[in-house]
Length: 248
Image 1 (cartoon, one colour):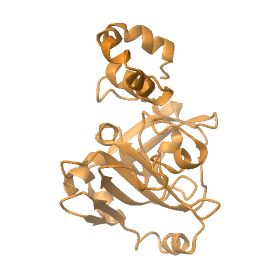
Image 2 (image 1 turned 90 degrees about the vertical axis):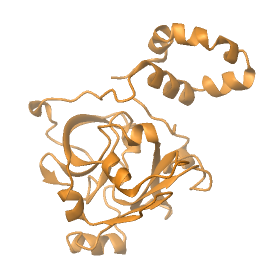
Image 3 (image 1 turned 180 degrees about the vertical axis):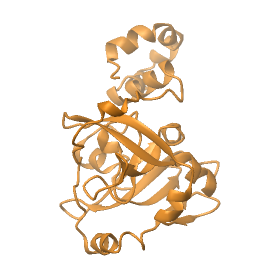
């Protein structure tokens, strides 16, 4: 469901009235009512913290699920992992955690998982419905033990963009602990293909497709996004001006 700015304004009338004193401050108004911050603020105020993205029936699954972004990292390191059936692949969990982790694909498969049939909305203008299976990100973060000052979760990937810069993305803890945010290893009851992010990708169902990082290699818990890439929270945010919060 896409919530328009006008609908949010109507629904948030009482809440906005309560913020009128703050809104008179020019600096606060600029921060609050920028396109990105307003969207994030209004969606979070009007929807329950764990409100679910719409889930579909099995007969509504798209016959073809297109690849978004990179279709193959095509690096020597990735080719070696793929040729070995990802037996040597590990997901590192690092940063501000009590227990750094290094998880194999069989270890992730053995954890309690979730299945969900959701729609992927690409910023390029297309959508597709697919059935995802994966481990709730919350389980992995709980196992690692986040430090008190953690505010963001950063995802580092195996794919390098055209100029060699690695792909990365980030989300805040609200989305990280959302029940539909999963580390997906299967699409439509089959292991992920290379085009769709093998061996593991993020699904953060309340945001646009570029937030769903593919070819995951490392998850890092951080207090600030400053100093990571250009500090805007993701590859496309850094280099193409995309919004960091891409809620739908």
